Picture (cartoon, rainbow, N blue to C red):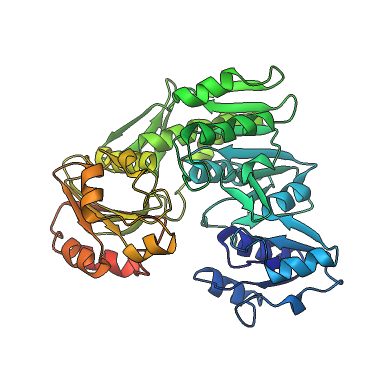
Length: 452
């Protein structure tokens, strides 16, 4: 098979390209910008385009298919030529479905917890020597790529993102997977740029439920009112499996998941992760893993990259990095850290990076989310606001909407980290949160400075 990727540098796109290359396909690609870690990883597999930009000469009739990424535009010259030649064009969700349409698909959806829940399911399956295909939104230790496809598997586990599929297909990605087992972890408004109202956003999950195969299962967070309403209205041929936060406790020795008959030491922590654990357990039971097999596996689950990832630790201080950016994710992550480290001074630092988080109409949703921190820093880059063509936002706007006496707002990364380093002393927990990279900051180096 000869496959060409338009916008190969995307997080999932470059992983799918690598997965198909490893499967023996002939893979080429193009993009107008490729950042790390995509650049280095593509180069390692000999898949990095010779130059940036779009070149229609890369498209010829010998191609079997083109896979189109969301980063490309509808008038992309390579896409136009592929259409003119009648070459089959897939989005990556369409292609993943095509590759797994004869397998049992488990799809994890929700506004928060998708990546960790997906990774927990993958961990339990792998631990119990069950082969499976997968797509997950973060690199996981023990896996070379975020996408894995094989001809010798009967199960596929996908993280179901609600963002749009491609520039020529405006459906959310998770509408295309048609799961046999579906999970919804929770609903909290996100992606304001494509779902301008809360009700419009919720509708996408209603449609997702309708894509579940007849006789399939919906595993849903019964503690989320909006999710429960949608589950109650599901088709009668869908099996509904509610779950709640798994029992847990913590002491000086660590964090434990607990039931009436067992205590399981955990490497991850927080109430939100105990919700994720409950969802993952129900999915694994539905896939044929026993309860005993699941708990034996989950005790060694270490989490995923940038999901409460520990960047460094000293005798009495620690630095975490987390992908949290939407209000519900920010609050859940901070509350988990505060609960895990009672008595410690929590220093929270949040970068506003997404379209929604930089929109003055969305900012009120952040009120109170950082209240658990002793000191909270919020950073935004005014240039990012310009690039996204949003109305200007000021430091005063952010301070007003977030609220709290513990807040400091910065629009200069250098000044932010200068002030943050002044905080370092004994007995502190630093929590750095962003879906971006704080303007290219080396986070491992920053962690060393904060702990030094």
